[in-house]
Length: 115
Length: 116
Image 1 (cartoon, chains in turn red, blue):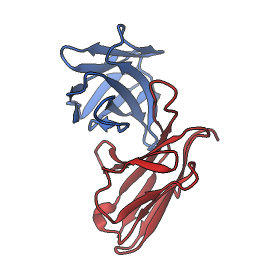
Image 2 (cartoon, rainbow over the protein chains, first blue to last red):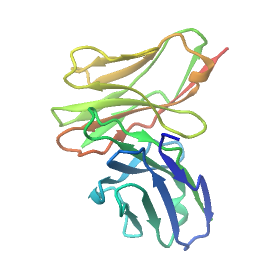
Image 3 (cartoon, rainbow over the protein chains, first blue to last red):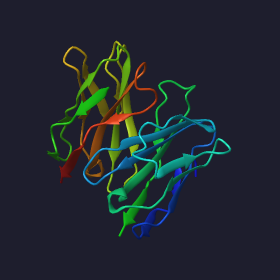
Image 4 (cartoon, chains in turn cyan, orange):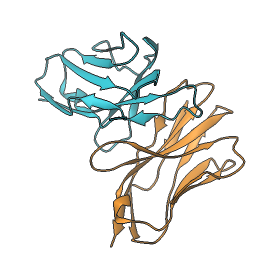
């Protein structure tokens, strides 16, 4: 497909475990974003990549959260020592910064449940 | 910093009627963009419409239009001729071009229900 894809669509894990969430952006989009959406709320920014580098990681809540984009395409959000409060939908978006206004296009999200 | 306020947690509209979803914002950025997204129960955020702070005309995209009142800091979404498939959560979001980098700041959303 031509859109942003995310895997897995659902992830159930136990408190204290490590999880990885994957995002495959729209082909050619150099900008990639991660957001977290808690139940009943709007998405909250986590991190933004331009190419391979994290241009803005100020939204990551603590050092248990980390994200990479080694080849400038697929990105992985990594959460260590998961806590019940990490349960949320994790949304990935991508954009073409060279195409005004840089609209962000979202994937379907990964629903993470920490038991 | 940016802040988006959506004061309507839920809205109801009859099929084929128009509905307005409210959005007010606050920012110190002199230049910014406003976005509306639709989120059906499936969860995916679907981009609907964009308004730039310096655009002279209100944005329109098919049945969607944006009632942008800069002095009042409001950017209300108008959906004309509502359809059953319009039932979803709607989010207003903004991006400040100078101070907020590339992040979007979202409101808490409005749940729209279209009744037959």
